[in-house]
Image (cartoon, rainbow, N blue to C red; front, side, top):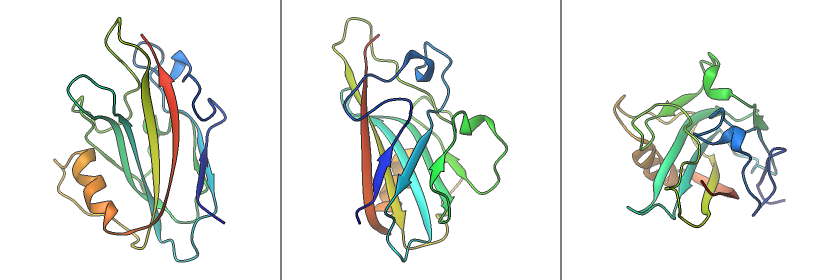
Length: 153
């Protein structure tokens, strides 16, 4: 069985509700997954906008998600969960910041990528950003799944 990633907030290829956008409530959408490889020791997640005018823009980076977890709850970044590690997004914040494409742009794609890892923890300096985290994660990835939503201002 392949690793899969879904959300009850939006389906593959459909618009992300305003509630999860920066101009809305800016809360992390609920995610669920299944089919992780047997040797998975942890998970990592990155949320990227490949349609940003300046190139790929990272909205969230999370590592050290416990291997026994099968999802992330809504508003996860507002909770005091000690197991997780949020890395700085391209807004400069160590949390989720939702979609915010420039006004007048066509819809942007937001890709939620989940990686099953062969290590229990990813350790990087406090100042490391989501992009640096994802580069390190790639070296330990057993499987990857993605979920793409869209958003237009």
